[in-house]
Length: 429
Image 1 (cartoon, rainbow, N blue to C red):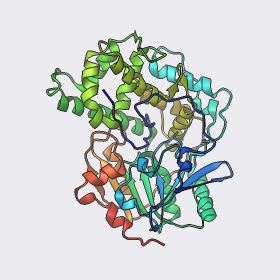
Image 2 (tube, one colour; image 1 turned 30 degrees about the vertical axis):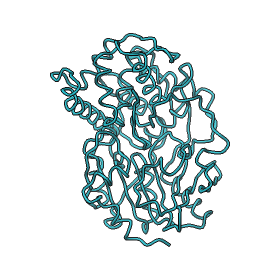
Image 3 (cartoon, helix red, strand yellow; image 1 turned 180 degrees about the vertical axis):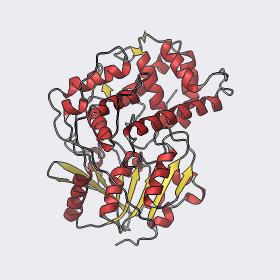
């Protein structure tokens, strides 16, 4: 059975992009995938900082900065503009994408060992404590000042001004920095990560509760139709499947599936829960007595979220994800309780030696739109409410079982929500 997951790039505390296939060994191409398209113009500033401008099909209504998620993802490693999950109202704009600053820079010598040790602690509570990934890897990550300086450099080189800004998920943080720098541009945020100034411990608590609520609701909705035991809860089904597992050899996978993989795979499945749930619950309810194909799918979900490839190697991209997440917020502490990927990331953040990113937001009651998914397991709807309060606008709410793209948000919000009106307030140059 084929798993389907969200097309958007995902956010903090477990939010790397998840696809059906296991990741290949990281080997950055000399020319980024996106830049091979004839309608895409790419450039690079010193640093390096790479960027791309995706041209509109016809006459452009202006330039829109799109911060599509992350952290720890290569913004230019995509096929085309369709993979951004944007509504059709943006088809007439040129789109600007900016890579995170770690992309294209070599990893520190001890980085691979540090990220592998971190992943071992996620999968096995008894694993030795991992060193600080941030300290061992030192991946370049944005501060608000560095990001806006890079953006200004790109706009100067291209001879352009910003008409609009889109921030999806973690991208809300750099998008808000761009909006402060360019107040004449409109701003649209969807399913934003926690607003600036939120304590790290609150980020962890909100995210953990959102995952639990999503799993609970999904199982309760599906159990009768799937002939499963409706006296149980979704989180219990996940926990029981993990407890029944020691290791399970899987045809087509170099590493056996472990109890830790089961928990990480369930977390990964929540990103596209609406599409995954009818496969997920029967599989976990029977696990480990499932087909090799179903076991392989669980392994692939776990591998994608943990950035594993080959024979269990871990891509050093994961260090950028952990480091950038940690520095986006302050107020992290070593969390008590059960071991999960989320708590292990928070533990890393509690020991992060770096400087805070300095993201900020300020009221801008016009030309601003915030969408929040009330059932989002990745970016709880309360985070959108927090952004709306800081920006001085109402939030447009919708409901979707998973982490939705802006195109989905517009489709599910009555009347399309606020985006169309906001975009119409600023004429193209």
